[in-house]
Image 1 (tube, helix red, strand yellow):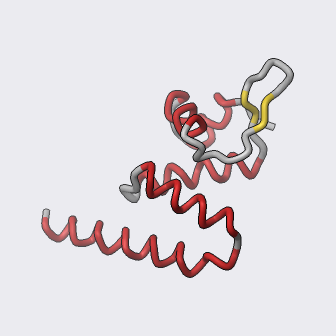
Image 2 (cartoon, rainbow, N blue to C red; image 1 turned 180 degrees about the horizontal axis):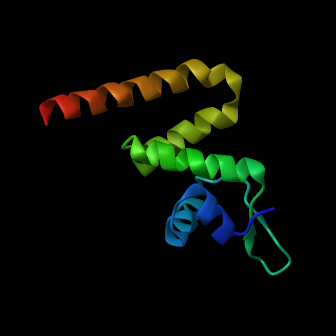
Length: 99
């Protein structure tokens, strides 16, 4: 199990960012210890790292939520997730080209 600070260090994000993501529901099923502090397992850590990647891809919070919802539905949504990422990639490439 990891504390918020440990996840922040491993995922290279600020404490405030992780707290914000948790409060927005972007880290699903976060557990709490006996002192009501958030604790994270390996799956949560990996997902937190994925959130940083999605943010670097210029995804906003709503897009991240949509992506998370698809992930939570399981493997049947892999095609939809891939399509979502492809559209984002194409938009980023167009933006780079414009710049």
